[in-house]
Length: 209
Image 1 (cartoon, rainbow, N blue to C red):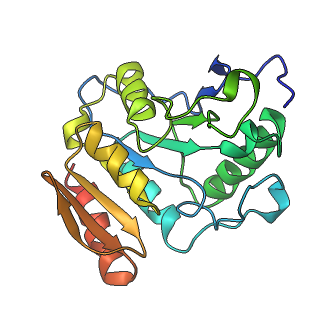
Image 2: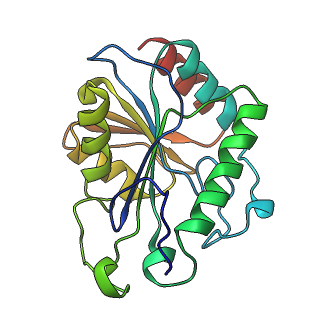
């Protein structure tokens, strides 16, 4: 893995980038989203910006948060970097393309956090169960600290149980699981995101923030 100057790395395995200049008053809830499999179609270990395609229906969700003045924060595990499959330079290109595709549909992300730590990595990235890696809540807590968020009122969307668990551990009370099932775990309510009805429920929840 090649690390280059100019990347917004808070530490060797943690990318923290403020992607809009929008200012938010303290105490706002946020909309947290996983990236691969949630915003864009999952391609495994994404390293080709040309292969990025948005999932149907996700841009209007982000746009709804934008219109309500709700910060939109991407929190993504990127073990491909730790494993040496690609570097932060490829991540930057892919992520830039995802944000570009969203912007074309008038949807904007305000902050991106990415965790590259993984036990199968090498060097400084070879850390098992790093606090920033989902299902641990570190990325959500870091965004909360930097943006002054009300985490309890915040929402999370993801395609894996680890996304929901990260939300629960960060103190959120509600999440949406792509192609998942409804459940409640220790006061954290998971709703499925599978069809138009689920999407309308999610949009209603965002508009009520």
